[in-house]
Length: 206
Image 1 (spheres, one colour):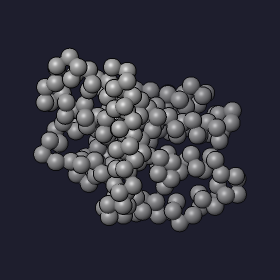
Image 2: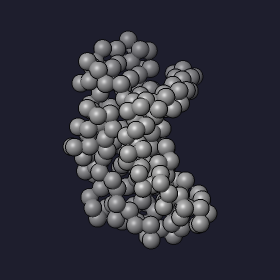
Image 3: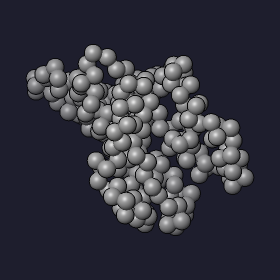
Image 4: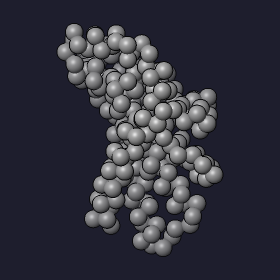
């Protein structure tokens, strides 16, 4: 899904940024909504979200993780709304990061400052952040998409969804989707579409 190869060294900044920005956004939004659980666990520091084993797994197995952000839904005025906002914050932060990286990418060419290493790093920051946003919106636990879906469903349906086979075997389902290529088949067309939209917006702005 992340397309590792001989230029893997250029992937490190993109992966670290995608992971930390995503989890930090969860923590910051939860904190802003009145849940100080992330703050008490030191999660308002972006670096605190890096899980070394999860990062290594992401490099070599193409499926990894960061340290999940602890939140307490009881601290939100409206737990459904709070959970949705916190869950959406991560993917949205990734897309914003991709947009900012796209601006830098365009400026490099506009002002003829385009060393190979910088172009590679910026390209991968864009690709990984877009892919990470889409991946996390898949409605399979523990991904953000499952929490968003759960918060949208009426109580009875939400309970059925949370106790479904998808929830119980989510880890194995995700592994199967990654290694059969099904997840990539879903993500790549959406990713290419979003990146083309970013390029269009940047071409208008710059």
